[in-house]
Image (cartoon, rainbow, N blue to C red; front, side):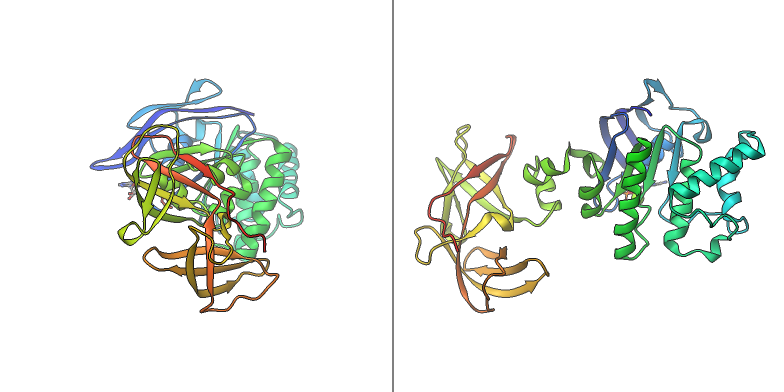
Length: 361
Ligand SMILES: Nc1ncnc2c1ncn2[C@@H]1O[C@H](COP(=O)(O)OP(=O)(O)OP(=O)(O)O)[C@@H](O)[C@H]1O
Ligand SMILES: [Mg+2]
């Protein structure tokens, strides 16, 4: 049980700035995901918390006490890595017992803790096996047991499931979620898989180029991305470039289309508009202001249907279609945004809602 504070944290490797600026607090028992594209500094951030890298600047506090300069094995943290890191010549039992032996526990205490951790990860009878006799998923569970058995205050996980197949990933992340809830351990999970982050995290820190762009609950990140990077990176999004003149946003070739501009502050100039596919509603044919497009491709995704709609002078939009009727490629559809986000330079993004002219199909 512990809180973690990262204060103005920075890491440079020579010319490369891996972490520019990280400043946030993780609450006791919280499950925080760090999400971002390859090379944005996720692993570097985690490795600084674990003690495998020292920060260039800033501080790391666990329960209010700085751990900077403290050796990795002295810190109250344990880490699970992406690749299997079990010692191949040791049985599962000895892999897990290793850290406990260093702590000079009695044989009986070690046996009890090892068994408890194997049960926690769902492998109660696997102690005698060697790592080579385990599947990839089982090896990662043992790696998790080996981290948890040390009863760290903070559990650090660096893409622990990314080398497993899709089904197994989902199963293991559900299990990890259950274990984290049961133990109430403070956990930081690094991933570049947004579905993983959205389904696991109490809060997500979205990183880009060494900075945290937004830190919030998954639903907030999805509904109200605070930067264009987050808008584009999380979920499916249509991003359009536009120009604001007075109370209208103009876009498309030769300003063919317009949408109402946000009314919060006067603004003129370039803006980006972000529209979720589910916020593009089908409009009544001929509806004033509706965007008319041709279905380029229909992709059936099981429980819903995604389509690419080519709108002349605008580009290709991603839309979701009901499964209650058929849509054919080549068919002409009218859509209208019912909700969109507007990003302007040096201004807070604004969400605009519209209801007029939308057909109920
Ligand atoms: N030891 C190092 N020496 C020099 N540069 C490094 C070192 N470690 C990381 N970097 C650089 O720092 C940046 C961030 O690396 P990091 O491993 O933290 O990214 P990441 O977000 O974990 O990426 P991925 O999703 O691919 O694992 C990268 O540009 C990387 O090349
Ligand atoms: Mg990494």
